Length: 88
Image (tube, rainbow, N blue to C red; front, side, top):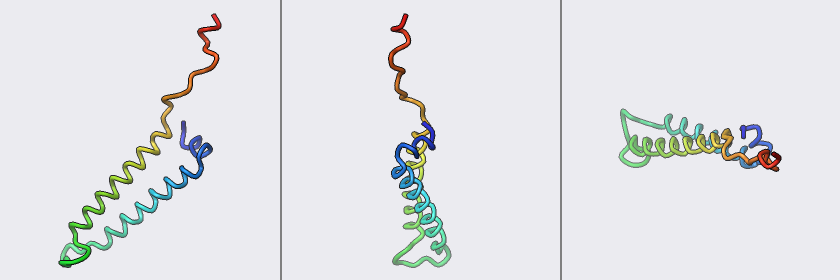
């Protein structure tokens, strides 16, 4: 099934998944912009906390990409009915 077929069958799920990926990408960019490597604060957004947040967001984006990749898969596909072998 292609992404187009998935969108036609479940528009809400496809749009929600694409919106979640976009939100995560923008959040990742925002976190990267808040890093202060040269004068880190002892409390709040430290570089270590930012790196952990980025790793979690990257893992979530990867998972969402895998889910979108599953839309591209042709297996398992339904078999033709009636089976062509039975006609012989």
